[in-house]
Image 1 (tube, rainbow, N blue to C red):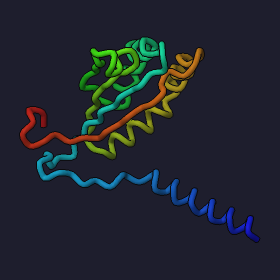
Image 2 (image 1 turned 180 degrees about the vertical axis):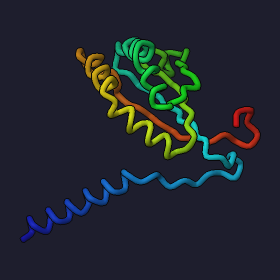
Image 3 (image 1 turned 90 degrees about the vertical axis):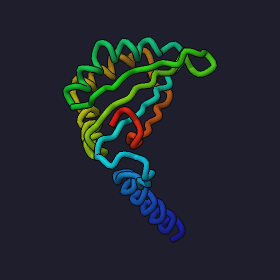
Length: 147
């Protein structure tokens, strides 16, 4: 009986976690943010040691083209200049989307793209490239040059 109750609690928790993962996070925007649907996604990739150049190569040769196919507009790419700040393993880039919903749809389509799946698998034949990915969605402030 205790095992059945424990399993039921576990199943309920998993269902709740799964359902909440599929909904948009609660947004509490500052009144100083521009009130448009356009959003920017700041992504920071933390590469495993020795894998940063493989990530650059994958973007150069494949990812940018696949992003374009899924209406994922790249604003720019950057890398830290200081070793203490991750210059040997960090890539930072910014994407622009018409809305948060459009971003979710684009990422879903990108992840299921057969070419991306092939490229991703091939690029990681000698081990995973990314140790960690950070993502932050943002809107421009009302005083920013970008709107």
